Length: 388
Ligand SMILES: *Cc1c(COP(=O)(O)O)cnc(C)c1O
Image (cartoon, rainbow, N blue to C red; front, top):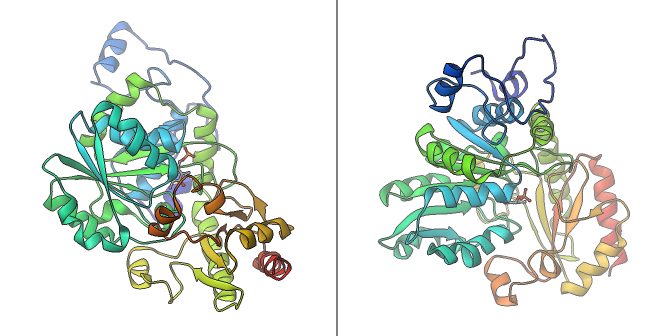
């Protein structure tokens, strides 16, 4: 293993064609040299590609790069981030099991836990991030999994991964960490004891808003169950999308450096602006868990939140005044993106529920892109003024 940047670039499947850049393997199945080889491969006695629902050279490329980045032994790549979230729970739990989860979860993960898994007898309880040191009381005799996201979306609350690793070990829980916001470049949950790391590769791993993809990563032992589940339920990623994402891994480090640098500049610039109630960014000294963020993250990430004075109406006026920044639901793109959670992604939550996960009515989520930071500042500053 070399450095992060080198592994992300140099890990690569090779064919016998001496290609320099990985080709796309658009092939549903792969041939066997003999009946005996076919038998042995199906019996898992020898490695190799059988059928693209099981594995494909492009998905293997992606998985090996991300495993090296996360420090995990094994993984699978899926068609979307949600297929990864679903698979990590469905493969490892059974009827009667219980999940303890952080309340601030991605919207669809929340729907999985509250609407989908209860149909099959898998229940869950939420713990508040602000109170996670007291989650002891939320553990039930049938609790099998601790599922967390840090930093949270969009509240940017941080959970102590060292604490989570120890808590999971003490209660014999499988610790799953959705590491989408931080990426393996900024934070490696497995280092702190996470058993499973999940990703929506759609965000920073793609980094240019092109394809969907997801990953489930962990030890060989736990991944056995996940491989079995995926092989027979079919959430496989397309070779083309895996090729895009494996290529994107080559630039993840340099992109994240710039995302973080730009986000820090934008957050610092607007901190203290009289039109804002709050500016939140994990690496600002004013973030309530700044010390923790510095302990477990290499930099603060590409997402900041700005809370405008004047609630929903002001936030909507602000968005309508933007000239460059995109108004769209994605994040982690080279282009800066703005979202107003209270009226869109989190509109189904009650005002009280939103308050519990740190979403004020005037809160704007800004995914800081790779444009020149002065142009991002200018667009935001102008929209703040024009929306008064
Ligand atoms: C986007 C996202 C997901 C879902 O991923 P998709 O690729 O959109 O299916 C899950 N978790 C987090 C934190 C996300 O931001």
